[in-house]
Amino acid sequence: MILTGHRIREEVATGRITIDPFDPALLNPDSYNYRIGPVLRVHRTHRIDAHAEHELDEFTIPAGGCVLEPGRIYLGTTVERFGSAHFVPSLIGRSSVGRLGVFMEYSAYMGNLGACHAWTLEIEVVQRTRIYPGDRMGQITWTVKSGEVPEYTGRFGRIDEATLPSSGHFLTTPHHLEVPL
Figure 1 (tube, rainbow, N blue to C red):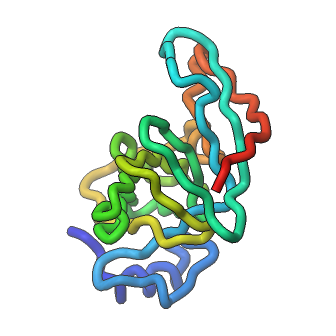
Figure 2 (figure 1 turned 45 degrees about the horizontal axis):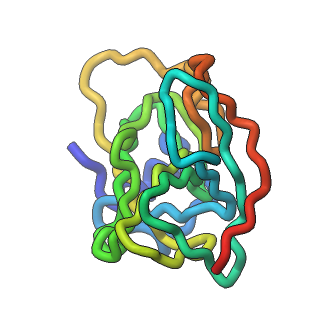
């Protein structure tokens, strides 16, 4: 069962759901809009080997926006920190953003109980698209859990920056990158 916007607001007030910062204007009938944070990371090279180390470049989205290019995966974060030990969170992109050809969270959309953090966003565009810091990029929904589930205690439940798996195959030392507008 999915929570309604009214119920999300109630659960935030009781502390059973964390949305920080919480803005009632971002509530929808059955979700909460999340916004994109000011920093993006992109793989330094266009050829990725999942079994080799590689680096990410990092840049800040200027107030005037930046243009994302097709053929790249951008990693960002939500402005908000989300979490709950009582409800399962799921992130999806907004349909208005998807109709522009901007795709969000296409592989890791479901969160873990007990994790509370800014979410890493996976972003890909099909055409050159300008985005701005703080844009409403997607929605988070909350589903009632059924049965006993242990809380998530892994490392991704505590990280507030865009990150990659720490399997030893990735080197995530970001370097500053200037992105033309």
